Picture 1: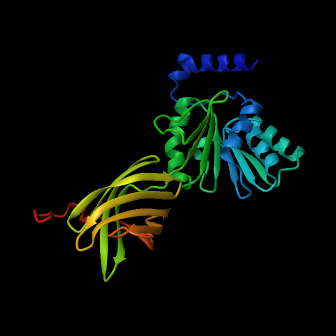
Picture 2: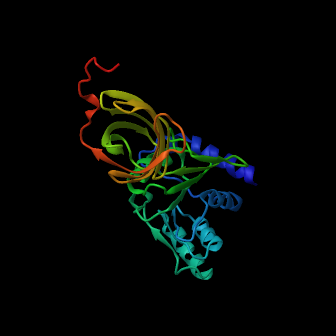
Picture 3: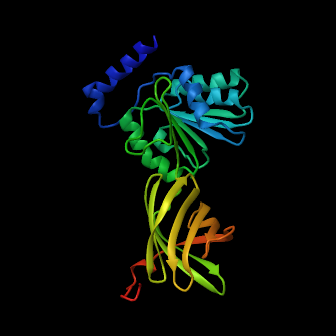
Length: 292
């Protein structure tokens, strides 16, 4: 039965009428309950979660989440008014209507700002079109789970391939751009000007301190958590190894910096670290030739 369902789904996906449709939509094919359970397990449900299902159909994703955790809240939207009515009736019958609701709404019009978990199962093109909506509205750290299809070049953070693929994405904070911070070292302050380039959760960066430039290494971004390392020579100080860890808070990053100062013996120095986003960067200022 399961193989037949997925074969039917694939055939419908390949239909030219669907592929060439000007107004994309996904027909309702309920997810296997086993896959729903896998999706929610991958999401790692918490007491304070707000689980949102885009294209909620019969409501089974949000209803299952409410059953698994009696404290979380959830809601779903669907373009089929009859399915919405049936899902709300099921919520009442299961005694969770105080925490779960379903609305007759287009998924593109849903307000995702309060969501902490977003589930969906649309055609691949539809999920690709939902991607900018999610990245624009959802808060960093929001978990996205889908059944079978992916979201184009946005690679999942975790994939469960024990059956039809279930993917998990974590919405990354926006860190693209120019950043500046200072660190005290002895009787002076060192100013760093960094440039970060971002493609979803993948980030690369370079930095300047004084007249010297270096690459930011081991950059990791998971939701609002960011970390990276740096090893560079600082004028008047010497070769310093750095490790940065922090949380992105809009136009600021707050956390700690660990420094291994010359002669690199003993424990590192740990300092509070705060970086601010800036409109310009000293990275591009002239360098000169006296940098040896």
